[in-house]
Image (cartoon, rainbow over all chains, first blue to last red; front, side, top):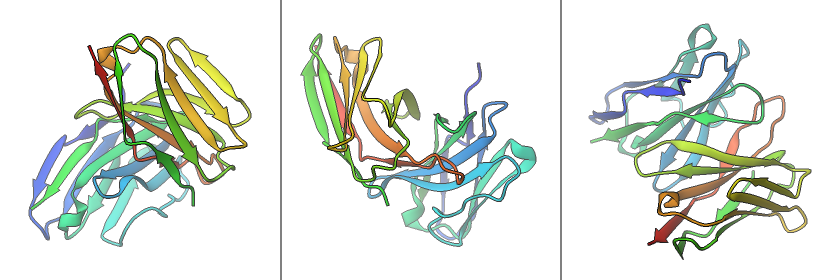
Length: 112
Length: 113
């Protein structure tokens, strides 16, 4: 079946611009996670959505980062006023239960 | 918070067994996971073990958990060149706030023909 999809696969932007990254989870998965993978920091948790509950934003590195999940399905991660240190691969995962997470291919963000 | 440590690199010959090791600090992790990442790709869930188990076998993969030493290992039997990838171990808390994963830095496995 269809897995988690993310778009775009690659994004190059200029410092100071805003970017939006999209995640389409596996149908029926109630939980959705965003992670970031960068050379210096490895894989880090960013934000978690579960159903209609308020998201857990404890991993967001600054207030320039925000995310929303519309209708309990698609999620968008927005980074405002991008900085070079935001360059990373942004990974989305969805989960049908509390024990397994299935990851998308990621969006590689490059901030020039 | 949780710290998860892995060795950076492992090289084996095709047909040999590979053992990738991981240590973690937080004994309250409910689940421990192994993910595989091939170049340019996302993370593929290989297997996971519940914290009250000490071994899980799945085809060529064997996971061993030593809770006393907080040590997790992944053994790949009859390693193939297609197993070359980066392997990440991760711990998950699985509480009411979700199951946010804390990842190790990854072990790059190179399989030589």
